[in-house]
Image 1 (cartoon, protein in one colour):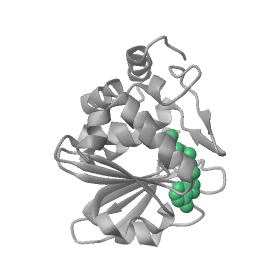
Image 2 (cartoon, rainbow, N blue to C red):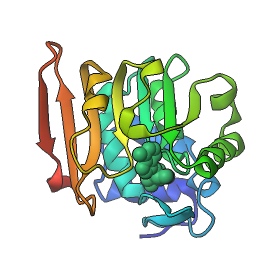
Image 3 (cartoon, protein in one colour):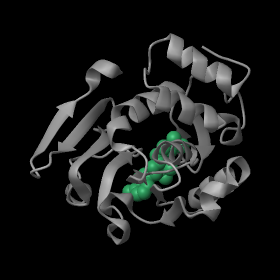
Image 4 (tube, helix red, strand yellow):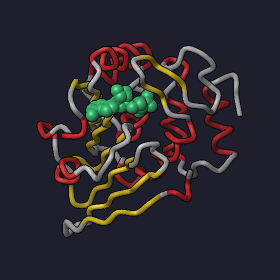
Length: 206
Ligand code: SAH
């Protein structure tokens, strides 16, 4: 599935039933994947971004945004672990609006710079207003300085359930996280308003 424009890419994902939410459509249309990927950005496939990292395929990002949508309402706070290209960080920021905040964290300094440069090139106002902030660090430990978060997106596959991230989640809140060596298992971890934590495999969406 490929398109010539960012709108074409998002329309293809919508037609394929990857997402339903109009808010997801708006966020993906507001974020030009062509500013984050050098070659063939409007094709639905993952791509190398250097330093051993990969930007996920657009349908994976659409799944993540759709899954987290109830926790991406205007004014909400988000942590994006393994921000890589910065693409999804910008989509998340669009969904939480001008009163919201997204912290993107990566452990590779060059990728923190890449994400910053990409967002500066695509939507500089997100950085100027501090709606988006990129941090260098080990995302498995979260980022307690800005906690708690309404939701946490994890782009880097984890070997086990990340207790530090669960601790930094609001009640209610949600984590979207690939677990396992080939990251083929996506989990949704929910903390309800009483603080009870449940985990659910989202295998069906893959
Ligand atoms: N979500 C991004 C990148 C996904 S690739 C995108 O779609 O563009 C996974 C990213 O996680 C890489 O950028 C990698 O550097 C980062 N990463 C891996 N382990 C990490 C850790 N422990 N802490 C922070 N970032 C990590």
